[in-house]
Length: 251
Image (tube, rainbow, N blue to C red; front, side, top):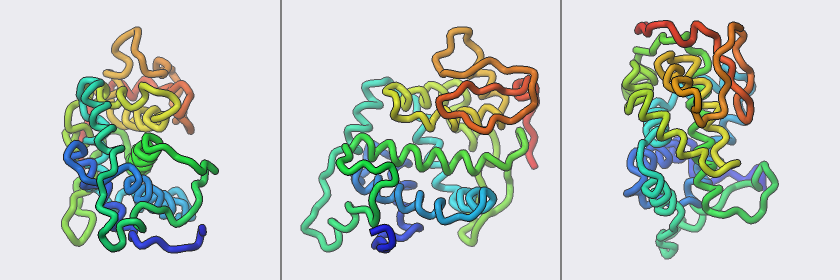
């Protein structure tokens, strides 16, 4: 089953997540299809033989990155957030159409070994996939050095071009949106890793994370070390002091 190719291509899987996250509350894509598309993208990353190759893959789909960060940082009241997730969970697909059932079935068993999966988990599979894409896209950036070159034949611009491209809603509101995804542990733990990479890259966001003495994200206050943390999930994040003071420049 692991070797069986899926009828959905990588580009189609990328397009499905991109369009869904651009306007999730009006999407007609259900959690099962999101899960299948996410797994296809995950398999593409698994096939990469180096971190550099994974970073290149992530950066080659800038519109997914833009849709993904907009989706994950969407600021809304908790009931509206829950309603959005419930909308994605509900499946109203027309199985009378040829090929529809295939789009709801993965080409392999789940890597985590789970057999019976609820729709909520499948939505968070998509959250995890796009978060990982964002993390890899940020991984090789120098602090505050934004990208400004074209990246493909379609003329799509590399992400992020500037602070507004990085966080469309700004640091404060973006953090509010990200917090919504970690309200029900252990779902959404990948968000902590994304917050860590965003904080290391963009000081105004790091300042927002650490502004309150009673902040709810499980992060440690910045230390004097300049060592870059290797893991963020379920761990405290220690940011170097210079991460909170630099100003951004375009490159």
